[in-house]
Image 1 (cartoon, rainbow, N blue to C red):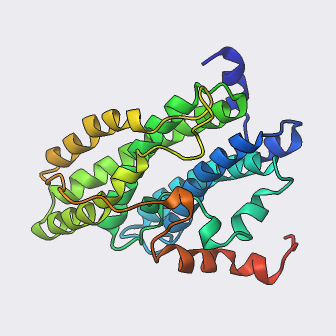
Image 2: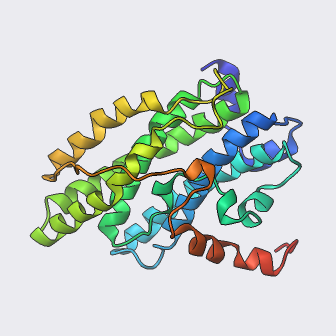
Length: 269
């Protein structure tokens, strides 16, 4: 990464993007929209654990991870919106289910705590690889967003890996629930590393997710085995989130997330 990208990354926010004169091209906006949707959907899911986590410290930890992801989503959606003169709120609250581009892993229900940890481990390791690669993008705004994000998702990996070990090597019951969580989330791993249909014409700008699988496969199965658990062997889900094909969980989640903004459009508080 060049020095100018590093300087921008230390201050990049949704507000700084909105206040700048930078405007994303149509192709870059479409790509950024999918990345922003991934982060936004997962952030909302994690927010549901606040006051529901198994211990007070986890209320704070999962809330903070969710806020990190919300920050990534805000920056990406704000940047995407510059191409269409739309705000982050327009894109978050006033698109329907079929218009969302999130990969299907992120919309999977929280389930129990172990299931959430399984989803978070998979997501965090993927995000680290993605944002490291994206920090080298020829698009300086995407590079800056990614350079800031990767510092945060590194912590997210550590958090979920510690819980994976704690639950996997804990009681027979916690071990069983952790394995069930991994089994439930593993079908959605494959889609993360499929080609992004909105990145095809963005060589040097977008990240091809397929080569990122090697880093994931080098890390996550080892963490699973070290926690006394078994790497799932399941058929991959059909996927299609980038093309607006979602599981039944996304619609109700969006309805809950969007209800206030849709009931009072244009409101400020």
